[in-house]
Length: 162
Image (cartoon, rainbow, N blue to C red; front, side, top):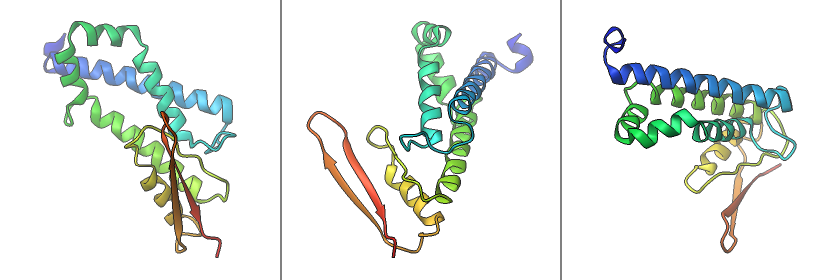
């Protein structure tokens, strides 16, 4: 069968993208079931972050995916991470579209916004994007960070009301 597709990597890439796309759709559907079209949950967390977290949890716990990684780790990593392959460009585009949509909708609101995630997630870039697209975009934005022993560094951004 892989001769019709091109090669084994392309066939596996198509199968993995099909799985990833269905998983992403299910994660979005879970959000919509719980929160409708809201861009934030009741705690202020951005929709795209919750959807991406749910997507990653579902992929990481998938038995078939785990078996592929266990049985053929080099092949799996090559297929999954090739920037010109059948998986990574599609997954990245889906995540970027979720983020773009949420930044636009969050900027249109005055509601508080919670940005959370591991270090290196570039929360400041998201906060600045929301701020600059908001009605307060021309005003100053202030950042304050504090570190808790054994926990993540917490940063908060405030937008000037003047």
